Image (cartoon, rainbow, N blue to C red):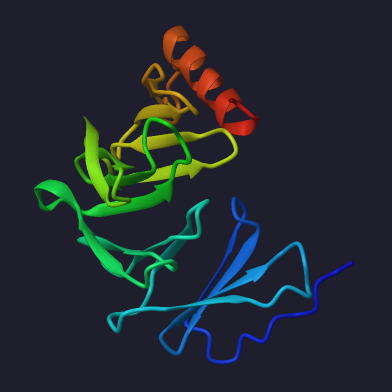
Length: 203
């Protein structure tokens, strides 16, 4: 059955999180997580710290939130403890994207202007930096279904990583051909491989 329309009066931010099957609504200093699978399930409500407008919210498999308000850091909200931890990008870089990886290799990833930062949860449950991949990044796209993140340097160069359940795999870089130019065979093959990976399930 179709879900009844949500009341979005006063909403400051709304997004559908496919990975958690929830609609996230931010308003009045709270994040509401509405189920996409059951209209009868009451929304989970979490208090957020006061601050600038929310730009991005990502829901972790364990219910934690990654909340981005600025290009400098991300807030990690833990509903079980009620704590909020500020995670700042390393090297004073600009945060381009944030996502939960649900991988044994890492729990959370920050894509910054200088590369890919991976964070893992230790025995105490606190996220700590585990590794980095250095790249100049102008923008990034993450596919939760394929576990692939595509990093773009702002020009024609692209680099993709696949964060599988067990490891982080670097895919061959490739360069997009400029209008009127023919791509090399190697670049065409790499771009085709990345497109296949990004378009379908890849364990």
